Image (cartoon, rainbow, N blue to C red; front, side, top):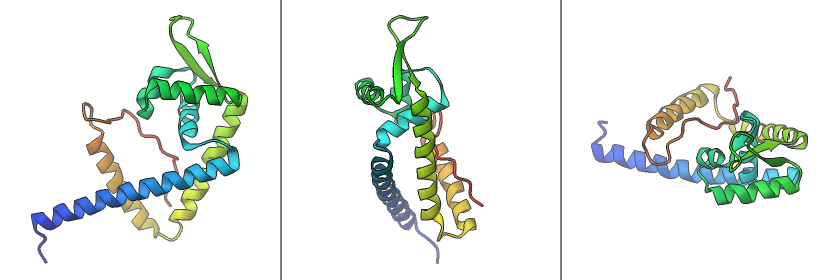
Length: 167
């Protein structure tokens, strides 16, 4: 059967709807796991993960990387500091800037959260055949590269992933 342009457009619309739904479900499940097991939410985890990737990050850069406002990041950092997971320090080279650092407790909690999320992802993907997972990952990588080109709304210069390997 030859697919018409209209059929292809419907397939793409269905794919986007399904991706949006799956992203919401994954986020809700991650939020519940992290809250129940570690007492943090996904917003706080994303900040911790960014900080573990780059020590001494500026609040502005965190906001840009995570697509949040500086005010939102500032609130989350205060909550993380209250839990002794992160701390803000004045930048020595620019007194007006704050650098955010993980504490030792923050490093350990970030690793624990990463393990929890990786385990959940493996369990979710377990019923899917490895070759199907590989094709899905390749297709999503292509879509990500297309959507996140410089200059596009919401574009990123990195891709945050829980780095689960597909075997």
